[in-house]
Image (cartoon, rainbow, N blue to C red; front, side):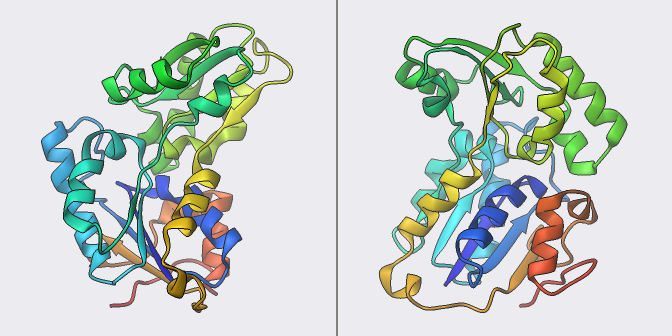
Length: 267
């Protein structure tokens, strides 16, 4: 069984780790775009072209399913990716976990990139699943880039700025960018003084991984892989980005692949 994941950068690590936890034998293909990132400031058409290029590179490895492990790319490029790849390769998007966060009807903050915050896509999810919850959209400019670079000072600054926009008494925070799941503990600490003591953070990685496995054809699901990790950087074989080793998810993938520092892709 082989599963591909696409993102501009290391935001795909949480979903890849969740897949590895569910199926340690799964062969993973990671396709990111260091030469084209960040995707957020690009026009929807330009972003779509970059996402398609990464998906095509991954598709050449004949995965059983492809995960778009990026909220912004899901907003702007999911239809184009599905139009090109399906039905041969099922394409799974990443949806902010607004539905489970809003279920209790509390005070919900959605942390997301500026490109996703206020988008018709996110507003539609709020209208459909927000229910009686009090929802605040919190734009987080620069946070995904800071996480991507493992820039400690920038992460502290951008998380603090978003925490300042998060209403007091918030009971749930939706991590509306896959990169943010890599710094969930830092986000929790930043809002601890003003948030509800029972604050819950909601990421998408677990749900996305489960949905990806549901879409794998039955015959492939029953066929054990060998747990390989293939890395593509803007379409070319390369090592897992160095910043990945700065996060537990990246280190777990490296360890599972039998490496200590980097994993070099195979073709």
